[in-house]
Picture 1 (cartoon, each protein chain N blue to C red):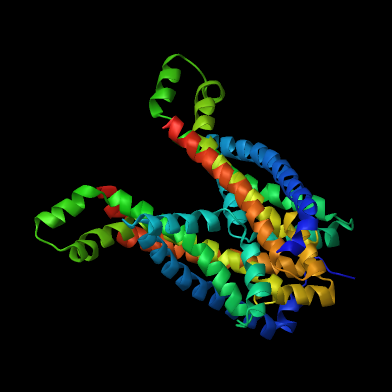
Picture 2 (tube, rainbow over the protein chains, first blue to last red):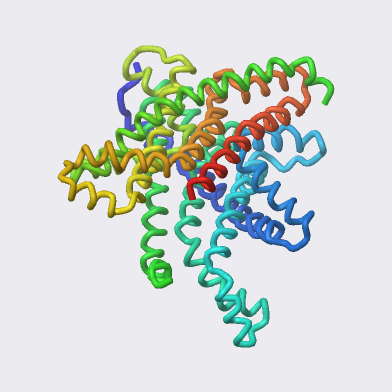
Length: 224
Length: 211
């Protein structure tokens, strides 16, 4: 007979849950790094003066923002092994989550670049700075302060997105808890714990980002 | 690729189911969103905190976990089986409602303060100002962002495939398991793209027109 809430499940499955949490964080971390990378490349392409490259960048953004994550998980998981690329479920999940997240990061960077504006670039040029100096010393710090809240949201949504990796049997939190649920039928306890775990992680990240934003970035936005 | 052609009609039917359940969830999300958004704007202290709690809670839990909760966990408590259709609709609606509430609230906040001042000067009370003057303007501002939530619901409905609800994603997986080709999933991606991309164009058009 399933109980309403059974805390003993945590004690009995401590190792599996800890391993699940480690996998969730590792998956979120690597997917995030990949999404920042592909987001940066996507922005370089989209902002390019060369028409075909700009079109490619725009297509990347639209394609990945207008299709569900699951589609990419399945395409990589079912498709790549038939082409001889067998990286394992974890790597496929990183690819799917990272490349899709990159489409959102592209738009975050684009928005920040537009917000900094032409006059900052012109002022930097008037001071005799080269293009890369202007980017690194003048524009990039301002872009970061503009984009920081959106980047924080992106980190949280990457974390929440990792739950989907359970469908291709990546042993992260949701997968582990689902297995415990299937063998004990204590689904209420199991999925409450799952929800609480994500809630805690997401709130820690949220509060961390908000504190960092207040400390380092928000006054720059207010001053603009 | 040719293997998928006999199943084209089946996939299109799956797309219709996806649209149907997303529209249903959108309807309920809009009702929840307007109610919570209005309350969040009107209520002081505790009432406001309750609306924040709902929004923050839902936005900190993956949609998959909400769907699992509705499908597996709630039946354990109420001792009634919940169909995949009902679980998906419920979870998507609660999920969309939280995002919609934020859309409505920020719509209300972006209506100019002078509208309130002018209406107060005319002697109107809070709810008459809200319902007759501020809310209609807020909704117009909020529509593009609301379409964004709708796109998220359509993409999110694919998660229902995991509890065996046969919409577009699950149809594509079933066809794949029959013909052992990737093409049905690629085709499903294409269908999702057509639906969501047209909606996002519509949203961008409305945003430009109102700006």
